[in-house]
Length: 116
Length: 111
Image (cartoon, rainbow over all chains, first blue to last red; front, side, top):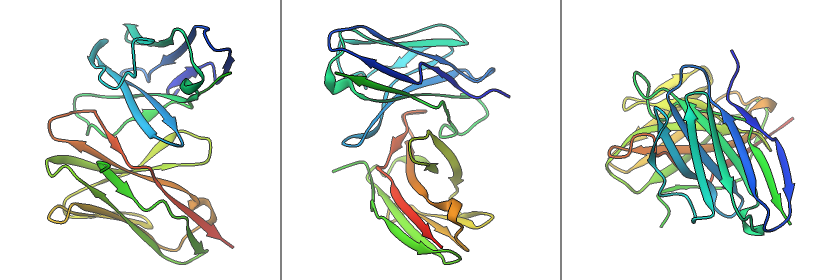
């Protein structure tokens, strides 16, 4: 079975540009999570969706960040405008919300974002 | 104070030896506990869940001490392929899915 798919795998952009990260969760999973990982702050939850509905976006750093999940098989995380401090690895993860322990999340390979 | 704290290491372990390390958590209402493994420049992967009575999965043993609010992971007969960063993960009882990750403990198994 295919795991969580993320694109692009690497993104280099200039400050001020819009960046869109994409995620396809594992088929049948109904919860989707966006994380950011940096050396300084470790792994941080940005936002999560349950059945395509945003449940908690308290981790989204500021209004420049937005996330959508238009259907069960696709989500985007957008940064507009991007800043150098947004440079990080962005992971998407998915899980089942019923019949599974909440920590059993499956991560995608991540998008390594560099903003110059 | 961080919600989940781990010794960053590195723990340098000869191949075949045993290594153990802990993680402490601050929220006494935490409900679920996990160990994830992350290889360099890769995504975190679930290693094992941690149950109240302690549990074992092959060479890996996890223990939970709710009274002292710590979780431990022990690796027996270490293999070179065990070299990785081990992330301690906690899920508070009132926040399904909002996992709290420790910064990780690095383990380096040497020949």
